[in-house]
Length: 421
Image (cartoon, rainbow, N blue to C red; front, side, top):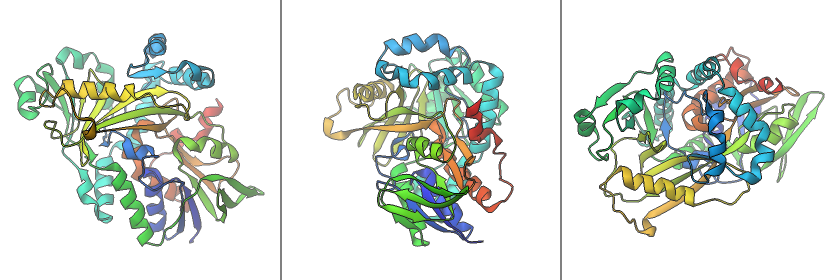
């Protein structure tokens, strides 16, 4: 049965969902206040990794001991602005609890594996179908360490990867130097995940997917969604800043802005902005031939069309809080110290900086499934650090739910009901 479905949000999840719904023969309207693929979206500025290995949650055992340090260090890899602490306290308590024990993080890793295991293959197929094959490169992903001891210090993280099917090749000493000669000599051990891939221009990729959907009949409304008209438990319309859009079903894929919409659909979810930064060095004199994550920086160093991008950092603060561009400069400093072939002073004209909002749940697992107050509304948000990689499978799961088919993956771990506990 063909339905009219409104997808709220034109990031990678919304774009993938729109295409999957079109594949099922539905008429789709996409509601997004900005341009698809634009800098307002988390999809624009992320690390660009398409990694099956991203099953390790942010919250791990022992994290609670580090929280005081996070509060004191405004430029650390994870920081919390004091002014946001009262509003963030419930999320933070859930965040710490989510990683309190090894069994908890094992369950999270299994839930993420279901979304990530075949992410490179799904993206390669989707990009090829949309005429965007040149935007997805399957060269692998490299984790770089000062030595084997530093790698072994992250034994739990790598055990979670291994338990969830991740295979890696170890590069020790000269082997690492031969494989990635641009790295600083202080790195003498690497773990190469050959199944990984990356996107060389995430913004253009999302924009291209939406344009492809438009060529197949998608209608796009440039406005913010503000709520729903629900009568007797059935959806009548999606309200937007430009008026109501009558429809049969709706999908909430609005990233960090999904929380209020989910509440109107009957689900109080715990969702916060993990504010992330990036810096791009245009026309770099040196840099890796594939994406690298140095262990001492915990940031993605990714070759993109625009230049060498360093992305990372987690800043817990209000969505409306002003950027702290010193955090982007931390990324730049680390980038320059990682690749000796880069100049010590990069001209400002060759630098670009960005701040975006990862829509993050405390347990690092997205919210996917029917809304409590109206099953005509489907949640598809809260992907945190794995949004780009898991966009295509999320779109497929949403299409399965709306079609009444058994979902391609078990969706129970992603239910909004877990926040009632």
